[in-house]
Amino acid sequence: MPLALTDAQLATVTNATALLPPAARDNFLRSVAAQLTGAPPTDGAVLAALRFVLSERGVAVGREALAIKSR
Image (cartoon, rainbow, N blue to C red; front, side):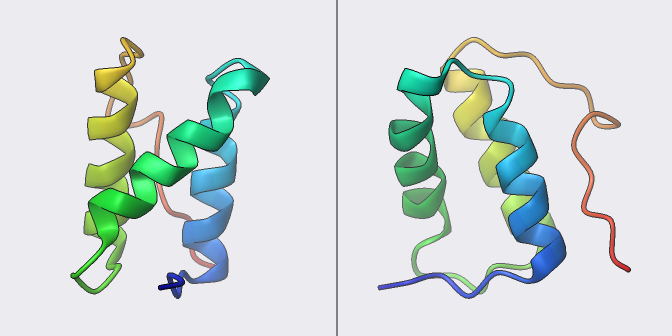
């Protein structure tokens, strides 16, 4: 089932992929989507999923590094 992310959420997810090598990005995105399955993709849920999946891959990210910036 596709996820319905806001433009700002999608931009944050896309920016987070830059922290990983290109070969790891597809699996990263699939893992983030799996974390978001079954719950509304609120800003907090998206950020929590990103932090969790990045930490699983050994990428430490501070709170300030990932933020959803609404227009």
